[in-house]
Length: 449
Ligand code: TYD
Ligand code: MG
Image 1 (cartoon, rainbow, N blue to C red):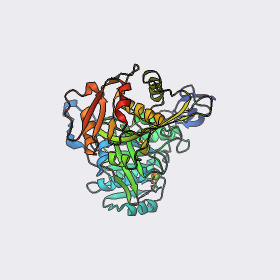
Image 2 (image 1 turned 30 degrees about the horizontal axis):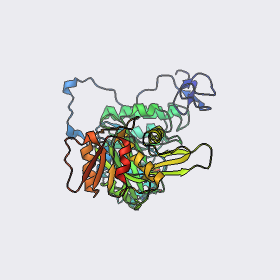
Image 3 (image 1 turned 90 degrees about the vertical axis):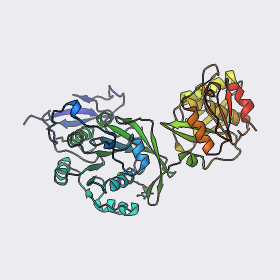
Image 4 (image 1 turned 120 degrees about the vertical axis):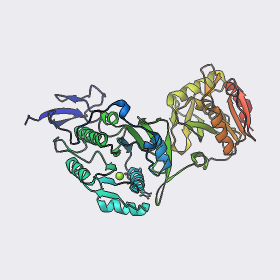
């Protein structure tokens, strides 16, 4: 047997060096290199070898997608589970990853055999959670095991149709000497599971923990290996959870699924707009509703701004849920083009409900919220605002104006301020007044009561 060599691996990004370094040359983090034993390249695949096929012989139909019983999860996956796909579900501890997958796999186990490998908790704990969720578990098998080799043996015995590994950081393979959770272990285990998933067409979910800075603990390479990366996020203080596709080989990455954590597990939220607006204050300056697009779906969210005079020399600028640089740019536009003096003011912008938005369509609403807070005048409660704002203060068209307006009308809003150029070819829904504008300075005449 070839001699095992020792390597220094960055625990953040997976960079490998033959000697110890204080700073990782790849991800520039300090003190992240740890010594690991790496077996030379004889670590064989535990899965069966692949077979040669003609492209034209491989069947692919839309019906290949399998529903997980949760529409929100199916949507985030791009329309259901694809056979043989490897899906990484990341999220902070306690956010509800195990709950989500137990619910999904319980549904899947009605039509096939599912194996839930619990490397973190005992089978009894999973059973207790299952009872809370009302899991039927007809063909759902639990395995409390941390050794990858044992897991492969059980998979070969049981021949499941679905596999869940909870979590990838707690399982280990004997071919590598380093500790479970280390970069080499995580990478090797995920690699073997990928071969298994692809080789046998076994859809596999991997649960992964997330580090402080928000990336999946372990190497970035893990994200490259899998087909789909889903992040389960949310504020532990709020019951709402958002499932977001960060990478998806089988669908769009713009889709999100919205859930609410209840006593009996996760409930899907079919109408996120209603939810995000439910706690909206009446007649408060600095609050505005914006119809944002999340993938193919319009969602109405509340954007809030607070402008207050600063007690320090350098005013604070904080953006939660929107891009910080974009906010700075909009403040500058307000200053120069709309002639509202915001210099020397502390400015905070927040998207209510813990949502994160990244769309130029928010610009106009952000400007409206800032102006409203600065002037201390509430924006007309039945108004929604969207549009991109350019550097000269001009208002530019954005995608899907019609869908946004329809969603606003559905929720009872009666007025929409939008880019003038988006007005073309749009028929206003009944009870909805559309006001098209060309320049951000026109906003101030329109938004206040
Ligand atoms: P869990 O799925 O164990 O989180 P993760 O696997 O991401 O670490 O969920 C943990 C939290 O969810 C826990 O704080 C309790 C809460 N919870 C509910 O509120 N209702 C439920 O039905 C379940 C099962 C959990
Ligand atoms: Mg868990």
